[in-house]
Amino acid sequence: MVGALLTVLSVLFSNEVPEHPCVSPVSNQVFERRLIEKYIAENGTDPMNGQPLSEEQLIDIKVSHPIRPKAPSSTSIPAILKSLQDEWDAVMLHSFTLRQQLQTTRQELSHALYQHDAACRVIARLTKEVTAAREALATLKPQAGLVAPQGAGGEPMEISEQVGMTPEIIQKLQDKATVLTTERKKRGKTVPEELVRAEDLSKYRQVASHAGLHSASVPGILALDLCPSDTNKVLTGGADKNVVVFDKSEEQIVATLKGHTKKVTSVIYHPSQDVVFSASPDSTIRVWSVTGGNCVQVVRAHEAAVTGLSLHATGDYLLSSSEDQYWAFSDVQTGRVLTKVTDESAGVALTCAQFHPDGLIFGTGTADSQIKIWDLKERTNVANFPGHSGPVTSIAFSENGYYLATGDSVKLWDLRKLKNFKTIALDNNYEVKSLVFDQSGTYLAVGGTDIRVYICKQWSEVLNFSDHTGLVTGVAFGENARFLTSAGMDRSLKFYSL
View 1 (cartoon, rainbow, N blue to C red):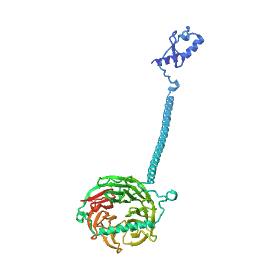
View 2 (tube, helix red, strand yellow; view 1 turned 180 degrees about the vertical axis):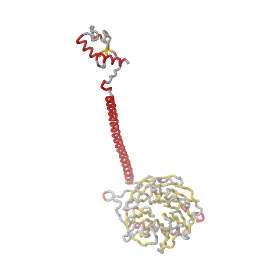
View 3 (tube, rainbow, N blue to C red; view 1 turned 90 degrees about the vertical axis):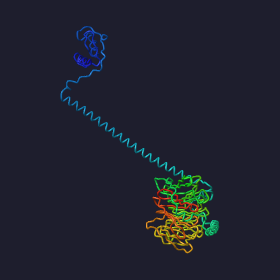
């Protein structure tokens, strides 16, 4: 209210809105200090009544800043419309500026998010490479008495270099075969008293199932073996690239062995050492220390996927087959390839391999439905068994040394007469993935679409289990057939017993 009054008075007497109002005590009028001081300096009197007045007599008035009235020219309708238009333009310009700033901020944020995502991807890749490098480094460290091969001058030798079958090695194989043949003939005369009889075996039922051994994200157990010296220890290879050692009695995992870059398709437990072997489509064979939980040797015998693996009875040599059409014979201790052979006339991938119990001959299956029998000492193909309709998925020699079981369909071959003497009838769509005789050669187990156990000589079925929800990829007998174990693509390891 006071501000408005001052404005009116100032306009009245000075024609200006006062910015620094003051009162003359002579005339009690309000003036703009700047103007009244100029007037006093020239006249020395009050402009209203002409009485003497000095600057010291002026009294300042303290009020809030007065509102300047609009000029008379701004009170017309066109002037008001122009004012509104100017304000609208200012608002729109401000809005446009804000939109530009928002768009710029969004682009900067998007760029920052892309940079963050790229950085996360790089970190993840580097972490994976570091992990792989550490695992590869671990495989180079000699462990458990297994030493890396050395060439002249102590330089590392190429693993794939063929050393050759020396006379000492051949003599060692021959001596072992002589002992094994003698022992087998003695055992073959009688059936072990501890062996579970067929009537008891037919009463077997599932007693345990374990599904947590391998990763659920990449399901499937592809290979199975039992420790010959302690059948409570079960060895599995999975689609998750891991090898697992499981204790049946303790119902717990003993070791998880990581190092393969692709799925594990073959596993073997050493008969007298705490050492296991595995093969994979990553073209490598790995030797693992169970107690150390690490890889102690990498055998690079092949240039393509390794499809079969078998340990010689000496425990010192490995037989392997591959899609590169070669079979290889390697030294376990050094990782060196002693010999590597292919049938140049066939030119076809090998699908499986298995030593004969004596260790001087072995069989391989091929992708074109053939079974080839090889003489190890001479490295020659000595017999062929045709007759299958698809790739041979599994082969197994009986403990008595006379019988050979092969699949895709299950065929039995007499090695003395070199002929197929029995074909076990299966369903048309049945897939055979695993064949194994028990240690006495009395029973034959077939794993595939389901699990079937046959008694040898009569070749009659005594067991049939269909508990797995996926293909059965491995079956094995416990000591004296006291239990049967199986593994499958449903990721489960199952045990059957009374």
